[in-house]
Image (cartoon, rainbow, N blue to C red; front, side, top):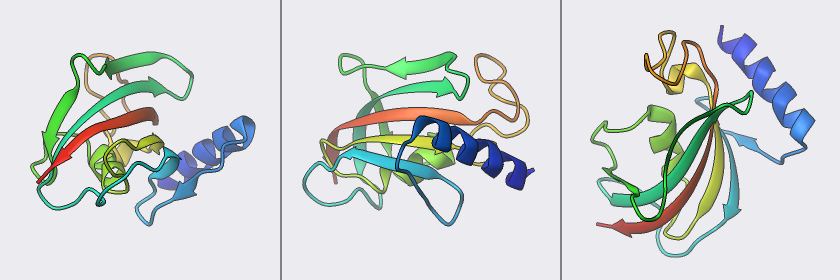
Length: 131
């Protein structure tokens, strides 16, 4: 299953022409704006906006700068793939992630907008990082 997900992701990346890197866990990422300051880590408090879509382009969820998402790294309040991706960033970073199901909502989806075994395309904008 993981190999099939990887094939779908690489085919999508090839079609878009994006220059993405893959982590050892299978998260794909592309840093659009590097940001500044220290890299997100440990138990940082992170405020960010995001948009989540399926690879088909179907919109799933978002949070904007007026009502951003707020999390503490390491507290399990967000998908594993998003947390892993955030740890690659800094304050004012912008990035694009492609997250395989096993780092997101798995075989069952979220029972709302994200179907089972869905590969997610997530764009994030880190607004603020605090210790």
